[in-house]
Image 1 (cartoon, rainbow, N blue to C red):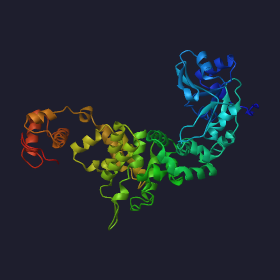
Image 2 (cartoon, rainbow, N blue to C red):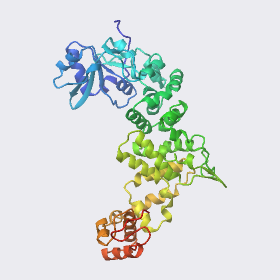
Image 3 (cartoon, rainbow, N blue to C red):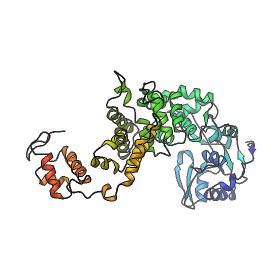
Image 4 (cartoon, one colour):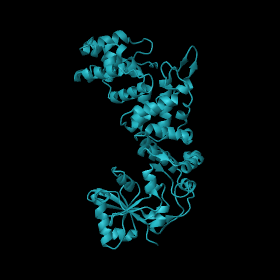
Length: 463
């Protein structure tokens, strides 16, 4: 193999390499092996960003790496990857390799040890194919990745069609990287993404979920979602969101334009969102297309409820946890709730203001408003009212429980929630202060035998 072309490192690159990586590389070098930091870590160091993945490639074979590092673990025996623990950090050390043809759009038919250049040529994007010689500090660039880094451009290594056929997830990863780094996608690479976009549905839900959530919390999340739409990925990946493209809205409330434009702007106005909040913002208006009515003006009756059902479908399709799904669905269902709080009865308003997810509801409401008419009066009112709540108002002592209702002669059923909420509202308004007063309120407002309630021994009607 000919010596690869080397370029001087950017100022301060080598000192910025994490100490555990340097320690692993030094031991490999002392044993006579090469050691290069590779992938996104080199890109991040050159951009003065904190590197996420600490990966080293070497000409040492896996058994030679394992012999140098007692306690090392083979995490990818078929790919020659050894995980080394050093100073509390985990560093993956992989032998230079090349790969055979990809038969399933994810895994190669075979992997064999190879040269450094062959290892670089199999990687996805040029900005991820840079290497840093951890002995000399020189940057090794075999694919013009430094030029793409300077131009802030995502470009596939070699033929983009081949790279995307090898791993179908790479089309989504290109968009996610563009959103994370605020890069553009090179024209030939973007054309190949459009051609390969329909095949994204063949990627596992878990891999799609991880890339999508990273995109949604990236600084360029709004442009990333637009790129999903422009590249043809949005429709196969998130048909519920794609359906919002071109759906009109009443201009007096939404001068920004259609529902998709509003959604993108909502994402833009979020400030460092969690994955739950970002996904809720993306899905908060997916109920508008199926509920659109064109009467005296454009209306979307019940779009919050319909949207919550669609959001749950999306979350389950992406294999989100039950807890995350519940939080996203609740935010979508209640994203209009805060606009009514100033006009609510005090007890009901306090219940909303004391919600654990109020910070997320406020953040979503703020972004939603800034993406439309821009009037933050309600946002400020709610935030200030919440700040004035006392600890007792946030968590008032419970006067009655479900067991207490059963003891009073009520059968468990859907109305238990309504009864307990009514007691809590009366308590927050000062109309009920004792258990006896709470029981009297329940008997008065929810008489047994009335519609929706029954006496012991009979069936309970659903609300």
